[in-house]
Length: 422
Image 1 (cartoon, one colour):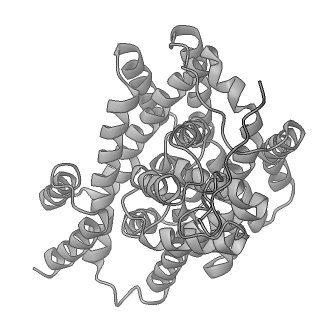
Image 2: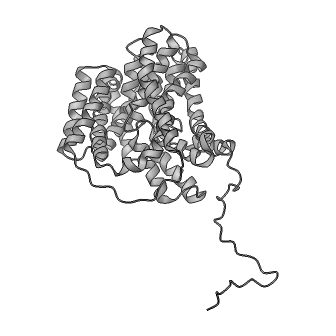
Image 3: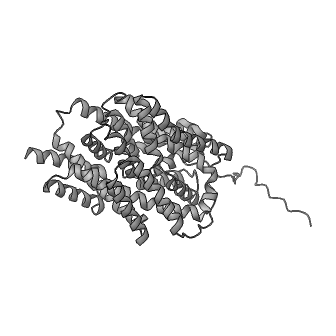
């Protein structure tokens, strides 16, 4: 039987293309890092609401509107970034930029999404340093009070999601008690490791379902190089900083280590960073909590709080130099882990043992955040009945009234100033 040939359309009829149309709003040939930067800059200027809201913005922009990747691929990418330590929304932005424009696109996506809030927090730090007398003390105290509500909301939400069951709650409570009784950065690291081992021994998660592979190609050899660089810096920076008395090296070591060990979201970086910057006297507890409260009022990732701390240092480098050094140091582990783990995600995702260890780690980090809710957040902000009442109203506004975080932050600062003047 002769093969049927496709019919040619009549002359002048429009030809129907079977190729996938280019991304909506973006030319098919425009894959430059600059284009990626501009897209993420708009998101960095408008993405209020925390990491869960950020992931929703990304889905609308890159799955629904632009079609950079499919629904299941995006869900898998989010799962990978929640599996890794570090800020999940920032890591998703890096991975999306990597898929669009290679390593340059990953850096462009991070810069666009991160720099607006980082610049705002550095300016806030410089304003506190230069005009401390002009800023009402009550307004600064209001920022410390709103931090109580924000951390309480994070503890509540994370505990409901990650600490279901008696065993997970027990891990959470033991972790909180250990960190409160033995306060040090290494205690927090030991708690995370112990929680992971406990989960590996006691949890039995279900085998993950099948899925479509991620549309990002990084070779296994390149991934191994990035992971080795991550480990080399994590293990080598403390030794170098301990042998060379240089403040810049000490900052890079402290913030890189904090960015490497944060499981569970941006709020968990609070106890790790405080343990690094407050005991040595680099930043006062009052400034630390005021900056943390201000970080809730700006768009973008919460990790940009590191820029505020770097700009607030009591010894150089501080100001713009200190802010940018700390910002780069705290985000560097996220970049190295994302590009390093992508080639190995398929095998990690199928590993039941890995999922069990991660379940234990997640319960442990909720305990770290629970301990931070008491010390330093509660003890530094709640001194009288009015403080407790304001924190309670802020918590209700965030959880039940669902007001925007920036509005709650501004309201607490104004209320604090009015209470001081009354």
